[in-house]
Picture 1 (tube, helix red, strand yellow):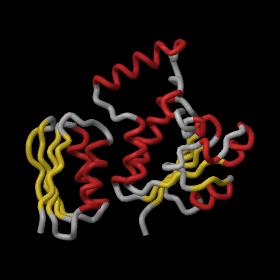
Picture 2 (cartoon, each protein chain N blue to C red):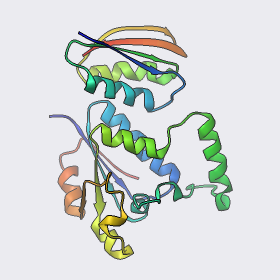
Picture 3 (tube, rainbow over the protein chains, first blue to last red):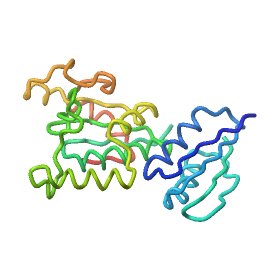
Length: 73
Length: 139
């Protein structure tokens, strides 16, 4: 089981979502993807994408402008 | 089966092309299948070297308005159109070029960005995708 880290600090709509999706496509089932970003809306939208893609949301931590989201494929 | 979005890109304006691609890439990111149908002024942006040539839809002011907005976008770290197209293709997005527009404007398939265009087609190709889409937009 691998852990994939996606750093999208400073990136804005729609890049954090898109980079998350790219990482999910690269990941194997069971892999963990950690996304680190600073774009406030993406902190809310990545969990929406996780639900839409039927993945597992492990955690959402940090402030709106400095956050870490962990998901499992 | 994944949900589907179909977007007609009729406008060649820079800001509207941004809107189209941001929506398209957001939809792909959220697991939808996406088809973009480029027609009329929108198709001009798919010509080799044509991507950045679109005016601003309002307050273009002979290019000054566009220059100002582009500066603001750069400061806000908005991704380039080239990058958005690359992301669109990487996530499996499909592009249809309107062949009637190509006839009217004398555009040949080899004049277009062949790395982006999946097929050239007419309204039938668009409706074929749109009739079972969950989201359709005309921009």
